[in-house]
Image (cartoon, rainbow, N blue to C red; front, side, top):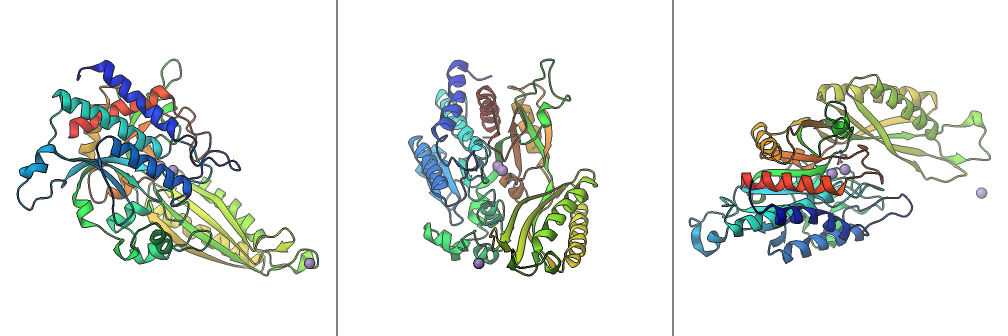
Length: 439
Ligand code: HGY
Ligand code: MN
Ligand code: MN
Ligand code: MN
């Protein structure tokens, strides 16, 4: 192990002061927790906070054409002409990071923990370099990805999808938020050029490996497979895979009408069809081992207490390790929705909004992360996750891997999401060791 441990332990704990510094930003008094959608005041404040923290550390900060922030720790000997003529000194860098946006009413850790731990881990790597115990072979960067949750424009991991070309930029630019503002207009209003968005070869060539630390979002580390006699699981896990997942919009259309004058027998009420569809979707998901099927958002149009809706949109999130099974589940959902709709005199229509295949993280990077993390957390387990991440999108282009930090209840996408300070510091130590070994 690298000396001095006392100074390093202190630095790892700064992840908690970094998290405390942003604890007041984006609180949602109505929903509880945090609402930090992309381009909101809260998310912009967090981005400014990150830029200030990175700049204060001497990192070179830039925002690319897709709105991704990069904070670079360049190789010092490459500044003075050490790189071969024409070679990009940032090519093949080691990159870590996560996102600062949140779901509506989310917890404090999903995203920001990966950014705060990256800053704290960087502090330690810099100390090690100054002490001569770390000799870097490549550049390093912390990346912050926009719209990871898809809370504003509907497609999760929009920044990394644009970067890799996993989404057609024309489609991305035409996505709208709840006010009908297009992603193109919103991006332009925030200083980005919509015409420049899309697959970015230069940025991709600069990612040699990508490592994302994230709060664990399920009960994985707290199951009896891993807990000790006191019922406590290990502080850190390495990710093995991400469940394939997608989002679909299911729209029921009927006859908008007056709640008082329309006889119960005269109605074609899409709210009735939507309600029955919600129940059917749960049954279809529950009947398929390993599947998740969720309706977390439903919008009646126009949405008045004394108005029979003319249309109800609901959004379905379906996940399963086998992408063919996911497709079959969605087909079954549409068939049932159409039957339900017909009985109510309504119509049902399904639109795919995004689809991500199951991702298995890079085997050799994952082995390296496990070996490094095991110095801090002996026997670091490997966990599959049901949650999507930018690391999953980037996995199609570059070796990616993830570290998860224990979440005692496993609750996430909720104000109750929680990480203990000691575990955050331990996760940061594991991240620093892993990054140090890979640099
Ligand atoms: O929805 C997800 O799985 C992720 O947290 N974006
Ligand atoms: Mn999330
Ligand atoms: Mn996340
Ligand atoms: Mn009236």
